[in-house]
Image 1 (tube, rainbow, N blue to C red):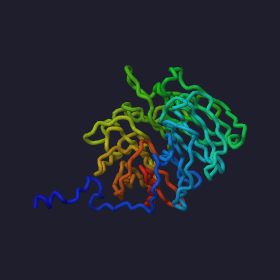
Image 2 (image 1 turned 30 degrees about the vertical axis):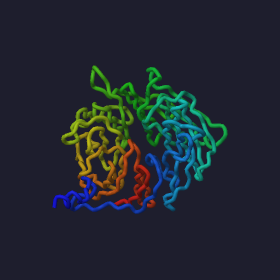
Image 3 (image 1 turned 45 degrees about the vertical axis):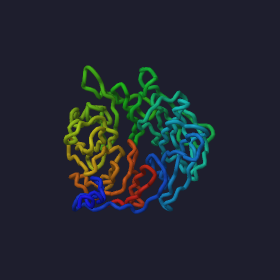
Image 4 (image 1 turned 90 degrees about the vertical axis):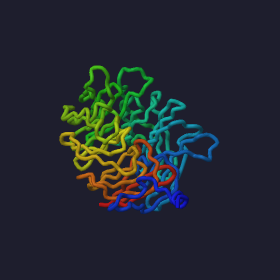
Length: 388
């Protein structure tokens, strides 16, 4: 009996959904290495990955066609070794533009691709690249493409990037701190083209589309040490900021006025576990959702006053590193398993059983035409049908 008991198959806690919760089954999946889906552009899911067939370590950009469920192309970001590059993607007319940061050369560049993966042009950023893993664009807002390299903000004429004579409208050096460290810790923009950035010097700064400063605020309440605004997100005319142990703040987009400040809430969101800096902030449905380092829960805060609305602790106890996606009252999130949560109450609606290694701050894109949420972890891309 003892031997028979030892031979029973071990089931890892959290592998199966809790009683009464539906299993979240992928609509389709594709084996394709990738660090994590960073964007859905022109029907292509784009990720940066490694070309394991190369003699040297080469970063590549892979594109999966969500209509055919096949790899469309996989091309190097540059000849030779690219160590620690961080491509992010956006649509540029009919084309795709990627920000590639090359640590080995301390250089940043914008690379314009066709939808077939052909490199149309490469545009070097003007200054030495500062190492960063934060969200620094690129973003097309109005007729400008906005991007940062960790220490500088750039605004390009968007239309000119599809020509042989790209036009840099303005650039701005952020802070007077030494350039050996990252200065910019986040970048966002509203529909009017106003920019919002966090800085390593514990500030949030807003600029107009022409680069004129609108306002700046400090995010720290401590007289002895500060905490940089690690994550920021816009929603309903407000800017929500997570400033490490300083917690959550909300600011008026127009004036920069502090609407509320909850310095301790992030530290007590996860029962029985100390937490710290959020890997991301996501907003939707009147709530802000924070990913916490050191904790294994996913908390939701009310946008109106910053109060804790609910906190979800899964049966699979890992940190939520990837950024969730909000769709029609449901939050889709992963910590190595995929969850669908009712955002009004935090109730678990469905849970996947697939083992999906999470990458910090990667996205779960949603396509409204296919009604699918995409999760790219490890060597496989999974597509889940949205519940609503």
